[in-house]
Length: 204
View (spheres, one colour):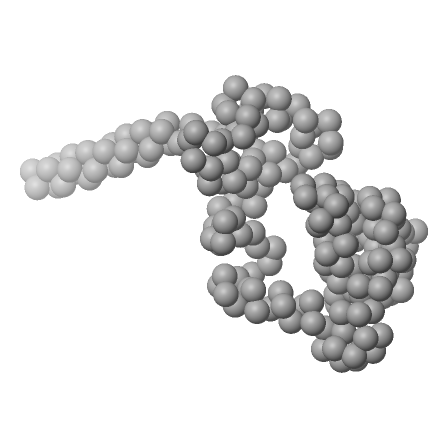
């Protein structure tokens, strides 16, 4: 895949977001698009290419359009958005204003690496797994206003739903952090005790 092809795919995804954000407040179609693109447009085997073949910009655009249609059926609106996003509409050698807006937002939030996530205007700095991000979003709600899905008793149901959507690789089973701390302290104490014993033995 070429860098140019990746930029065009990002632009189609950005325009899909713009075209459905009002009709789909939960952005389900957008997130489905991201998941589908990852498992189709970014894999040579799916596109019918070998590892030695070059996936061109046109191949990526065609694949991105197919995925846009699969989640929203608004290819025409997304195409218009793509063309109109350039400083001179339809002239892709001019600056792209959507990317320019994203650049300004990245500077405001201090984003220096990608992918990146902001939650309520704050840059998320945890692990990029489905479970950790889900927990961070839940933590952003006050206790009295947490969504039902954020309650502990619904964690098994969340895992089941992720498995049904083939997202098992994005779900990390939570570990007990307190046990990690206890074991670490025991290890440190044992190591210090060994050093003291060796020092006393050396003195004698």
